[in-house]
Length: 351
Image (cartoon, rainbow, N blue to C red; front, side, top):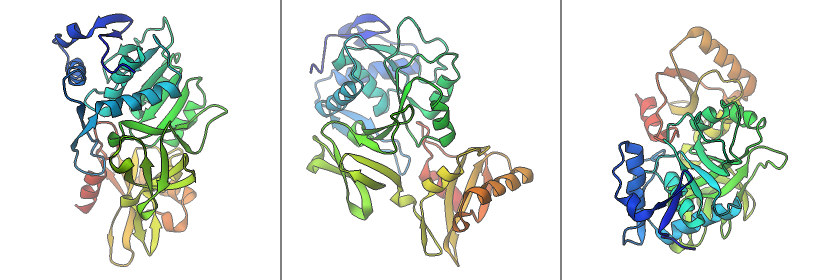
């Protein structure tokens, strides 16, 4: 595995790395890409990456370059990517998911189709198929709106896959996967097939990676290159075996109401079908229950809409899962990569 090749193929053209490092792009997103390329080729044996901040304050951490390269190689092997295969880079290069697309192109000698992260994908070339791409939810929606889909393997990350979107994916030939990933593990450590006859309910660990349940029945990831050989997550899990698992929700999101534990993610999943507006489940303190379940809706307050959503909840949720209140807000707080910002959401509910 060559970590620092002298050339990289961009949009079908071989480019000399030294020359690319001298470029001064006009756009911010291209500048971010060149900055990462410079960081990858600098003398340090590590890169700096920023966590998403979906559950706390974003922070900068360091990852060894050989650790990052090993992650890239696992993806290359899983999707059987070969020299010259085209992959689509449409993610911000400031975050680990975007950085990894470039590393995959470098060590796999792949053809990196480099486009603006906010691209609507209508101008993607169709002269040859795109073997692999990674997108967040809002980008997938744009991709599905195209007359034809030219991507063979699509990795979807950033947040949980809404059920309506997962149903749409059943109608396309692109092989779609949900990723279980952390910045600290240099993107995904496991994948779940979302469509096709071989779709799965469980995540499958990639090469050399396994999981177990650690503190509070949360998923513990075991993989080479981690300090102590493992990292403890706050994701409640259910294991089929050491290489196949389900994610139930975040332990720090658990709502204890009336002595019963509720996972917001599970309630949100039940409500997903035909929910007319973006939403999230949260809670506020309550003298009798300890905490009461709140449904937060993104949109303008409307009594007819509220009545409709109450009926929706009544039809799909059990007696104890029913929200005790429905609140409308102008915009749900999200991180840059589309995740609900749980820390900000909790602050909003306190006010």
